[in-house]
Image 1 (tube, rainbow over the protein chains, first blue to last red):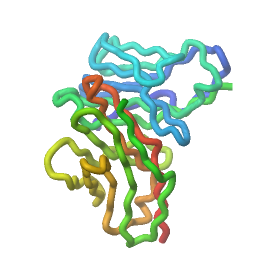
Image 2: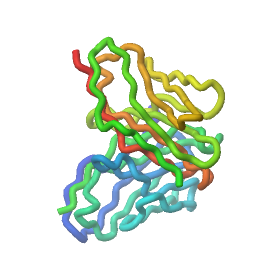
Image 3: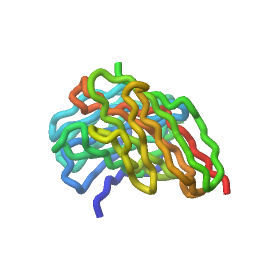
Image 4: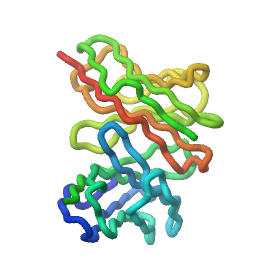
Length: 115
Length: 115
């Protein structure tokens, strides 16, 4: 089954404790992206990647890191989480054959609480 | 800067009645517009998109959207609402100024369909 998976689905942590949220897709998509969803703000893009070793900032990259060492994986790293990073996070992927015309496929989401 | 506005936080409609969820956009160049739906505790699912061509776009689950260039709108519509359509709906635009790699989402509109 074609899908985007994220782990963990739920996470409670404390301020300053480094964490990683994994994202993996099995559709051989070039493009992957991370979003955070907050009430009243919709989805805001954190980082995106056009292919292996190619990443760029979205609209809200502060406090986050990403890496793209393999085509299928795009982990999101919070080096020193803070309470304002409490949010619902989504990973997405899409092919780049027709650039921006392509639909994005979303993972199930990771709900993060930073105390 | 590119932007998307969903002017209604919530839309209430009775089952069997037509529904409209509004979206307006601001882009430089040609717009590439998308609608996604989010059911409770799920990731976003693609509904439909406008790239070029016919202004009336048909999508999944009986939804359609009308692209209106003069009013810069891309409203989502369905002739007869179902209770199962109750969900959170997002309008999105690909940011062509960045090569289409960034996506901007509206804040979302929650649709309630009452039996």
